[in-house]
Length: 436
Image (cartoon, rainbow, N blue to C red; front, side, top):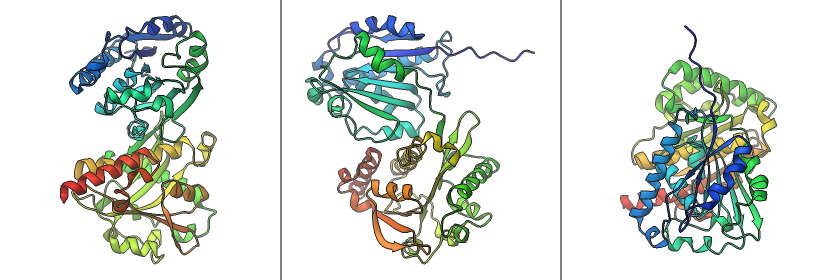
C-alpha cells in the first residue's frame, strides 16, 4: 500500500476589514498577494456600523462570524491546511475593527491558530495579553503597523470597551514575536497602497514559521516520555552551567526531580524544537513550602538539597511560594537568540506566565512570592525586567538572589511591564476580592 500523500499547504491570507466599509482594499491587494503565491481570502461582514459596535451582542456576533469563516478556510481541502502544524496555517491581515474581531476570537477560541497576524490601524488594547496566545501555540508572529496621524484609533474605545489605541501607541508587550512598526504620518486607511504592501506586508508574510513550541510537564502523560525530555534538559544544564561557580556542588542528584514530580507533576515548562519535538530549553519553577522558601532566600539550602517534602501541589485556593530554580536554553540555539531578547527565552517566559494564569483561573491559586537565583547575566537581567528586587543576599557561591511579592504587587499590576504578568496580578486581585 502506498503511503497517503499529504497535499502541499497553500499560503492563505484571510483579510478582515473595519467598520462602515465593504473593504475595497481587500480586492485591491489581492493581485499583489497572488503574485507572491499568496491566496487572498477576503472576510466581508458588510457595512458594520459604529452604533452597532457599541453593543456586546453585535460585536460577539461578528467574532463568531469570523470563527465560522476561519473554520471554512482550514477545512477547505483545496488549501491543505492543518492548524496543529505551524507550517500549515492561514495568516490574517486585519484593519481597524477587524483587528478587534480577530484577536477576541483567538482569545475566546484556543483552536483558532494562525501563522502570522498583520495589524493595520489596530484598535486592540495596548495591554492585550499576547503572551497567552504565544504560549498556547496559537500564533507564530505578529506585526503591528502604526500610524501617528490616525484620529480614529484613539477614539475606538467609545465603540468597544475593550478596544485601545495600539494602532498609534503600540503594545506594551516586549519581545521578538511581536514587531511594532511606526509608519509615520499616514492616516487610518494608509496601509493598502502597492508600495505599502510590498514594503510592509510581503516580507513579514514570507517569514518562516517558528520552530519552537511550549509544553508543560503536566501535559506529558507517559512517565517514560517525561524522563526522556528531562534527560535532554540535564544535558542542556551541563552545557550552560558547567563553567559557573558552584554548579558541580549544586547539580541535581540522580532521580531527584522524579521525587519532586511525584508531589507536583507540573513544575517544568519545556521548549521543544519542531519537527522532532526535541527539548532545547526548559524552566523549573516549583511551588514550595514557606520554610523552604526562606531557606533558599537566606542561602541555607542549595538546589540539590530541596527534597519532596519541600514541594507542594497547586491545591485549590492555595497561596504557595514559588522558586524559579533554573532556566536554560541549548547553546546550539544561540544563533537564534539575542541574549535576553531572544525567541527561546521569550517563549519560555510566556510559558511560565501562562501556567500560573492557568492555575489562577482554574483553581484560584495565587503565587504569594517568587524567588530566583541569578546564575548568569541574562538570568539577572530577566529578574530585573520583571521588577524582582535583589534581596542583598547570595547563594553559597556568590550568585545574587531576587524576590518579588506577588500578593503586594497585585494592588499595583501596572508596575510590572509584562502584560501577561499584569493580567495575572489582576486575576489575583479578583480572587482576593471574591475570597474576602
